[in-house]
Length: 198
Image (cartoon, rainbow, N blue to C red; front, side, top):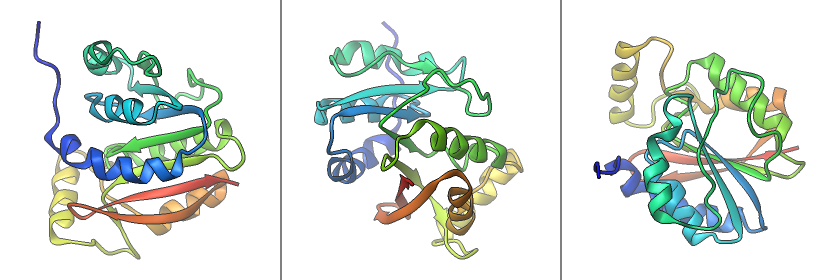
Protein backbone atom coordinates (compact mmCIF):
# COMPACT_ATOMS: atom_id res chain seq x y z
CA UNK A 1 0.00 0.00 0.00
CA UNK A 2 1.39 3.40 -0.95
CA UNK A 3 2.06 5.85 1.91
CA UNK A 4 -0.75 8.26 2.67
CA UNK A 5 -0.28 11.89 1.59
CA UNK A 6 0.88 13.95 4.54
CA UNK A 7 1.32 17.66 5.25
CA UNK A 8 3.31 18.77 8.30
CA UNK A 9 1.62 22.19 8.27
CA UNK A 10 -1.82 20.49 8.44
CA UNK A 11 -0.59 18.40 11.34
CA UNK A 12 0.61 21.55 13.12
CA UNK A 13 -2.53 23.64 12.61
CA UNK A 14 -5.38 21.11 12.79
CA UNK A 15 -5.83 21.20 16.58
CA UNK A 16 -5.86 25.01 16.91
CA UNK A 17 -8.36 25.16 14.02
CA UNK A 18 -10.51 22.50 15.67
CA UNK A 19 -10.85 24.63 18.81
CA UNK A 20 -12.47 27.40 16.73
CA UNK A 21 -14.68 25.01 14.75
CA UNK A 22 -15.96 23.39 17.95
CA UNK A 23 -17.47 26.67 19.10
CA UNK A 24 -18.63 27.74 15.61
CA UNK A 25 -20.22 24.63 14.09
CA UNK A 26 -22.35 23.75 17.13
CA UNK A 27 -25.51 22.57 15.34
CA UNK A 28 -25.88 19.32 13.36
CA UNK A 29 -25.48 19.82 9.62
CA UNK A 30 -23.43 19.32 6.47
CA UNK A 31 -20.08 21.10 6.26
CA UNK A 32 -18.53 21.59 2.83
CA UNK A 33 -14.73 21.58 2.84
CA UNK A 34 -13.10 23.37 -0.10
CA UNK A 35 -9.60 22.15 -0.99
CA UNK A 36 -9.34 19.06 1.23
CA UNK A 37 -5.79 18.21 0.14
CA UNK A 38 -4.34 15.35 2.19
CA UNK A 39 -7.53 14.86 4.19
CA UNK A 40 -5.84 15.37 7.57
CA UNK A 41 -8.26 18.16 8.51
CA UNK A 42 -11.29 16.21 7.28
CA UNK A 43 -10.30 13.11 9.26
CA UNK A 44 -9.80 14.95 12.55
CA UNK A 45 -12.77 17.29 12.26
CA UNK A 46 -15.20 14.51 11.33
CA UNK A 47 -13.92 12.43 14.26
CA UNK A 48 -14.07 15.24 16.83
CA UNK A 49 -17.31 16.80 15.54
CA UNK A 50 -19.56 13.73 15.16
CA UNK A 51 -22.72 15.86 14.95
CA UNK A 52 -21.54 17.09 11.54
CA UNK A 53 -21.57 15.44 8.13
CA UNK A 54 -18.21 16.38 6.58
CA UNK A 55 -18.04 16.71 2.78
CA UNK A 56 -14.48 16.91 1.41
CA UNK A 57 -13.88 18.37 -2.05
CA UNK A 58 -10.93 19.37 -4.18
CA UNK A 59 -10.17 20.36 -7.73
CA UNK A 60 -11.09 17.76 -10.39
CA UNK A 61 -8.19 15.36 -10.75
CA UNK A 62 -6.97 16.13 -7.23
CA UNK A 63 -10.07 15.24 -5.22
CA UNK A 64 -9.03 11.58 -4.85
CA UNK A 65 -5.71 12.57 -3.23
CA UNK A 66 -7.37 12.33 0.22
CA UNK A 67 -9.52 9.26 -0.41
CA UNK A 68 -7.13 6.65 1.02
CA UNK A 69 -7.07 8.53 4.32
CA UNK A 70 -10.86 8.90 4.32
CA UNK A 71 -11.28 5.18 3.64
CA UNK A 72 -8.93 4.20 6.46
CA UNK A 73 -10.62 6.62 8.87
CA UNK A 74 -13.90 4.77 8.17
CA UNK A 75 -16.04 7.39 9.92
CA UNK A 76 -19.82 7.32 9.35
CA UNK A 77 -20.02 11.11 9.01
CA UNK A 78 -17.06 11.48 6.62
CA UNK A 79 -18.33 11.49 3.04
CA UNK A 80 -16.30 10.50 -0.04
CA UNK A 81 -14.46 13.40 -1.66
CA UNK A 82 -16.09 15.14 -4.63
CA UNK A 83 -14.51 17.11 -7.49
CA UNK A 84 -15.27 20.83 -7.15
CA UNK A 85 -13.89 23.59 -9.34
CA UNK A 86 -15.03 26.82 -7.70
CA UNK A 87 -14.99 28.68 -11.04
CA UNK A 88 -17.42 26.18 -12.58
CA UNK A 89 -20.85 27.51 -11.62
CA UNK A 90 -22.33 23.99 -11.48
CA UNK A 91 -21.03 22.92 -8.06
CA UNK A 92 -21.72 19.28 -7.10
CA UNK A 93 -23.18 20.54 -3.79
CA UNK A 94 -26.18 22.86 -3.97
CA UNK A 95 -26.75 23.28 -0.23
CA UNK A 96 -24.54 23.11 2.87
CA UNK A 97 -25.07 24.27 6.44
CA UNK A 98 -21.50 25.58 6.76
CA UNK A 99 -18.18 25.63 4.95
CA UNK A 100 -14.49 25.36 5.77
CA UNK A 101 -11.31 25.91 3.79
CA UNK A 102 -7.63 26.04 4.71
CA UNK A 103 -4.72 27.53 2.77
CA UNK A 104 -6.64 27.97 -0.47
CA UNK A 105 -7.29 31.69 -1.02
CA UNK A 106 -3.63 32.49 -1.70
CA UNK A 107 -3.40 29.59 -4.17
CA UNK A 108 -6.49 30.55 -6.19
CA UNK A 109 -6.39 33.43 -8.59
CA UNK A 110 -8.61 36.34 -7.58
CA UNK A 111 -11.26 35.09 -10.03
CA UNK A 112 -11.33 31.86 -8.02
CA UNK A 113 -11.68 33.75 -4.73
CA UNK A 114 -14.60 35.71 -6.22
CA UNK A 115 -16.20 32.50 -7.48
CA UNK A 116 -15.76 30.84 -4.08
CA UNK A 117 -17.52 33.66 -2.24
CA UNK A 118 -20.27 33.82 -4.87
CA UNK A 119 -20.83 30.06 -4.65
CA UNK A 120 -20.90 30.02 -0.86
CA UNK A 121 -23.22 33.01 -0.83
CA UNK A 122 -25.70 30.96 -2.82
CA UNK A 123 -25.49 27.58 -1.05
CA UNK A 124 -25.19 28.59 2.63
CA UNK A 125 -28.37 29.26 4.60
CA UNK A 126 -28.99 32.54 6.34
CA UNK A 127 -26.79 32.48 9.44
CA UNK A 128 -24.50 29.75 8.05
CA UNK A 129 -20.77 30.08 8.76
CA UNK A 130 -17.75 29.92 6.46
CA UNK A 131 -14.45 29.43 8.30
CA UNK A 132 -11.30 30.03 6.27
CA UNK A 133 -7.75 29.56 7.52
CA UNK A 134 -4.52 30.94 6.13
CA UNK A 135 -2.22 33.96 5.95
CA UNK A 136 -3.91 37.32 5.34
CA UNK A 137 -2.78 40.91 4.94
CA UNK A 138 -4.36 43.72 6.95
CA UNK A 139 -4.89 47.23 5.57
CA UNK A 140 -2.54 46.53 2.68
CA UNK A 141 0.31 45.34 4.88
CA UNK A 142 1.92 41.99 5.55
CA UNK A 143 1.55 40.89 9.16
CA UNK A 144 5.04 39.34 9.28
CA UNK A 145 8.29 39.16 7.31
CA UNK A 146 7.69 35.45 6.75
CA UNK A 147 4.32 36.20 5.11
CA UNK A 148 5.98 38.81 2.86
CA UNK A 149 8.57 36.24 1.76
CA UNK A 150 5.85 33.65 1.23
CA UNK A 151 3.91 36.09 -0.96
CA UNK A 152 7.03 36.68 -3.08
CA UNK A 153 7.48 32.91 -3.40
CA UNK A 154 3.87 32.50 -4.56
CA UNK A 155 4.11 35.35 -7.06
CA UNK A 156 7.29 33.85 -8.54
CA UNK A 157 5.33 30.65 -9.23
CA UNK A 158 2.25 32.40 -10.61
CA UNK A 159 1.47 36.14 -10.48
CA UNK A 160 -2.22 35.28 -9.95
CA UNK A 161 -1.41 33.75 -6.57
CA UNK A 162 -0.69 35.69 -3.40
CA UNK A 163 -1.77 36.53 0.13
CA UNK A 164 -5.17 38.25 0.15
CA UNK A 165 -6.01 41.42 2.03
CA UNK A 166 -8.85 41.22 4.55
CA UNK A 167 -10.27 44.56 3.36
CA UNK A 168 -10.59 43.19 -0.19
CA UNK A 169 -12.28 40.07 1.16
CA UNK A 170 -14.69 42.18 3.24
CA UNK A 171 -15.72 44.10 0.13
CA UNK A 172 -16.21 40.83 -1.72
CA UNK A 173 -18.24 39.47 1.18
CA UNK A 174 -20.51 42.51 1.11
CA UNK A 175 -21.23 41.79 -2.56
CA UNK A 176 -21.94 38.09 -1.98
CA UNK A 177 -23.91 38.12 1.27
CA UNK A 178 -21.08 37.14 3.65
CA UNK A 179 -20.15 39.27 6.66
CA UNK A 180 -16.85 38.92 8.51
CA UNK A 181 -17.79 38.17 12.14
CA UNK A 182 -14.45 37.28 13.73
CA UNK A 183 -10.71 37.22 13.10
CA UNK A 184 -8.97 34.55 15.17
CA UNK A 185 -5.16 34.79 15.44
CA UNK A 186 -3.52 31.44 14.81
CA UNK A 187 0.02 30.03 15.06
CA UNK A 188 2.67 30.78 12.40
CA UNK A 189 1.27 34.23 11.49
CA UNK A 190 -2.00 32.81 10.19
CA UNK A 191 -5.62 33.65 11.00
CA UNK A 192 -8.96 31.92 10.92
CA UNK A 193 -11.65 34.22 9.55
CA UNK A 194 -15.28 33.47 10.39
CA UNK A 195 -17.83 34.70 7.86
CA UNK A 196 -21.59 34.50 8.26
CA UNK A 197 -24.25 34.44 5.56
CA UNK A 198 -26.57 37.42 5.92
